[in-house]
Amino acid sequence: MNTKFSQFLLCMFVLLSANHLSGQTSDKAELIQQAVQHQMTTYPQSTLRDLYKNFFQDVFGPGHLISDTAIAGKYLREELLLCDTQQKRLYEPTGYSGNYYRVHLTVLAQKMVSYQRFFDAFVKSAERQPQMSIAQWKNEWTTIDSIIQNMNLNLPDEQKDRQDILELLQNNQYVLHHSQLFNKTYRLHYRIIEKSVFEKEILPYLPKNSTNL
Image (cartoon, one colour):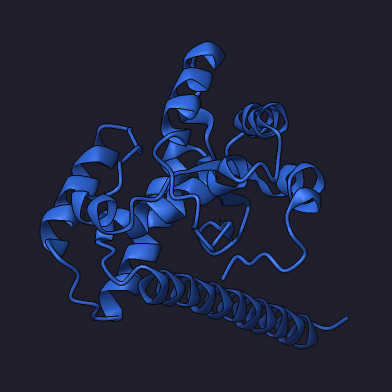
């Protein structure tokens, strides 16, 4: 094989690889935009903190919520008393990958699923390894946030929230609560359950016409 032909093949390989990566990046950006648009349509009072929370839940799941199963069970029972039993949206995927679901406590309040089954699924989900390290998550969030900024959503307190998130990540932390505005407006009560666990152990017990939309 002569040198010129070898160089030609190398150039073609680089070009095709670049196009492939560009396509992957474009697809990812579109998925992120769709996830943001879905949240803003469903919960129009969302802030940047609430968008952030949705995406980080997709990566880290509920692991940070369970340090003691007895306490986790106590909190779940207490929160169950506060949930809206008429909540129509029973579950919804997190982030843009849908690695986890937010499963609303309505499924317990209406006795669609037994407490033990639900709690076991929650604990099992918490045992799953995060999708990435905190260092990787910092880069991931930078990408997500740049897309959010380009969407010009004019979120409440957006710049302050952006700075708070930056400082959080600089301290190698990642957990944020929902904004007060979000909590006051929607009063959601849910737990994060890993996708395969949810689809195997919870979804079959929900009404066939239940929705995540």
